[in-house]
Length: 287
Image 1 (cartoon, rainbow, N blue to C red):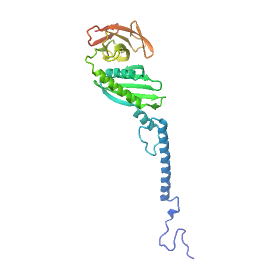
Image 2 (cartoon, rainbow, N blue to C red):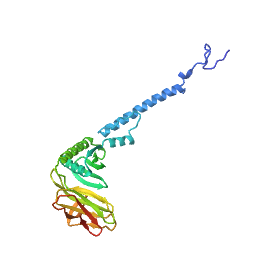
Image 3 (cartoon, rainbow, N blue to C red):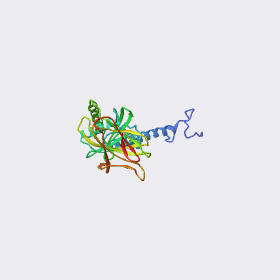
């Protein structure tokens, strides 16, 4: 009796390829792996789609099947739903236009803060927390970012875009003014760094309103623009960021960022020209 190997066909001159019947063979392993990967990709795509629905506002980008909607997607969603635009106008002009836009839309302004050349406004509605950030690009252009958030998570891009549109309208209205208001500056003539708040009457073309802006940080010898006003009187408060503070104060109390400060009054005169308020370590003086 002639004995043949199990996979040998006596009618063939070569062994039979039994890979079709062996699930451990390389082709079948690849086929099985492909089916499993397709199943995994479909499952992950479904999870990602569910994540988009949960966010309600919509994903900023289309998810590639097989990519889990994790930290990367959350980052793209967050950044893509912050409305941004660059306007013609310096930071002060854009800040004034932003205040007018928020007031026109019935949005409550909560605070205005300035650090270096950048200004941030916080505002709110019954459902939204709104942050407007203004950063100078050049001396005549300002980039504005509007972030409107509901319940700390959901982004309201439609409202953010509308705020930008209203800022643009306010800038156009203000640009039509025939006479510019005098510009007000502060100068640090103290040997220490100082921080200043200004309280002034704003509103070139619309209803006038008193506004407080700060903090303006100035190094020794530095001079900064702080406001435009047609009003004859303006108020300042200044202090040094030291443990034993040097302060420049007066009798007019006004709230700023949840605290009352004693502002001193300055008469700008009737000439309606640019003005600089100087701060020295001994006393405050103007020039």
